[in-house]
Image (cartoon, rainbow over all chains, first blue to last red; front, side):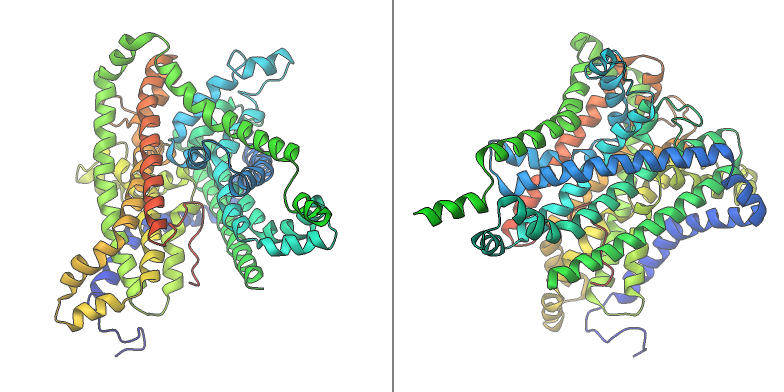
Length: 276
Length: 293
């Protein structure tokens, strides 16, 4: 037997792994590598020139700031939602729990047009804000609304199982030693939840950075103000500027990979704390 | 007893705090989930059933529905076969590079939908690596149906595999080994032993994969070319109608997609409930696969 794999009495290893690697290469690896090959033809100077162009930097800034704001909103409210779903019971709780995953199931374009309609200056929610001279749709605030919708399940679903695992006797011990409820939360429960909360935050942030469908309807898409990086890629493609589109795509891909790595690190950290 | 009341107060929040937290959570979910969901149907029917039906019976709407169904009918089975093969290799055998393989399978989740479309334009587009060759042989992949299918397969690539891998790892390989040692062939062991064991996980992965395949927008938008009646999927058709200020028709088509989302959530909840009864928690979509499993 080769060193490559351990002996097994089950058949089908070569067929299954062979097909897996072939399919993975054809669908994912070769197409993705075409991106880096294209970027390489730009040369370092050309790549740098596109990637640091004024409009590109502005779109990356819009993407980052709005994604961060949406992830912060979701971290706070997601924690409250997870807490309520784990700790309390109320009528219709199972339906509410199932509905949390709606942003995964609802196509992003549907979310986009609906949120744009709701938050437009004459929309159901938008007109309340318009009365106070606040515009949400067609401004960066609108982008935050769409990204909050998209990222909503991440913090809830990451925190929920960890919160369910917090041992009641630790809380009781702290309480019997005289800690108030707020102290118990701050000193006992929150430290246990913190890694999961941070992981959920990072997942929501990562998802928001690449998001396109739900944002473009509500953003207004003004260059330098409310134009997100994925939209700029589409704009460059429509002008047949493949090189420009590729350079932005590579920057975004590298950011995603960096986030993925830090999320893996966070999970490793949180599972180690779980063992302790 | 005084100590007992003291304890009850300290391990539970006061009634007011409880009510406050429940209210905050429900208002947040109502604003961001409930209201948009309701609004889709409200807008779709705002001008009555007649206009709703008329919008859905339009030839362009029909061709968009057909293309969406066709795309899902190719992408889901393709990723299903892949998911089963990958899970069989990863869960039933020990080999070097396994954790790298698991990480690579999750890769499409880290790629922006727009970038997922872009890579196929770079490969097969007119200026792409294979563009000249394809043109010489009169094959059109980009701005045509094959490109839409390819982009959808890419975007939904991990869905079924990442559900099956942890499930089959948790089940181990003893049952299959017993079947094989009793004289069953590999295929028999798979059909009679493995498949009944993973059917709920399989269904779970398939419905989530299907929802994304039918609803994908960004990646498909980049490769589609937006030719009405030809290369428009339902989400792309929604965009066109919306940009033409034909809101009733846009929300009518959107309501079908919202219905799909609701059906997906119902089946998903049923499968989760069923599998919890069997003692296994389905892997939520939000969690990246742990490669060091």
